[in-house]
Amino acid sequence: MTLSSTQLQTLRLVAGLMVPASSGYGVPGADDPAIVADMEATLGRDAAAVAAALDALSLRAGGVFAALNPEARMDVALALRAEGGAAMATLARVVLQCYYRDARVVRSLGIEAGAPFPRGHVLEQGDWSLLEEVKGRAPGWRAPS
Figure 1 (tube, rainbow, N blue to C red):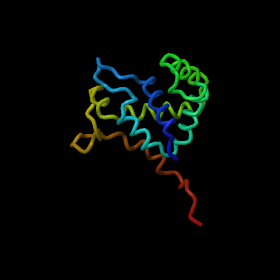
Figure 2 (cartoon, rainbow, N blue to C red):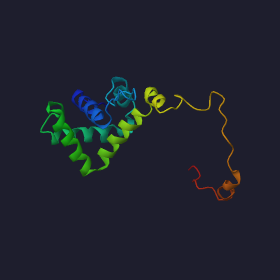
Figure 3 (tube, rainbow, N blue to C red):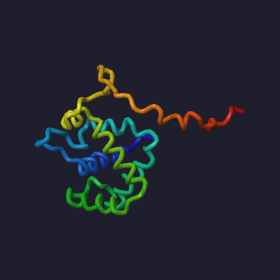
Figure 4 (cartoon, one colour):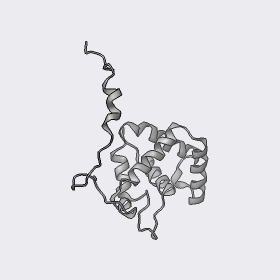
């Protein structure tokens, strides 16, 4: 499933409301074109729920979310967030996961962008004896038929 152009526009606008750009921290908003493109490209199984949330925003806006002024958009978004629901939770998760996986945002948090272990970082060993109880259990899967 792909989002319509109206849904993509709504996604960009609501993402910008959720996480606006900050010149003080030198980070883009969640409405940055690269971040929105990442959201669109990685929706996968969340596409239907995100589309439902975006449609609910437009319905609450009286047709087109983008046609509202910025204050009215915020009011509509906050009202729908207050109602909650799985679709709105999925929309929020998609926006935030894509925002915080952007290299610019990660660097602004003082974290090295990219996977942590390919560069020789050492992972301290944990207490493997904690797995003994699990290893002693009978297999929990069914035999193929």
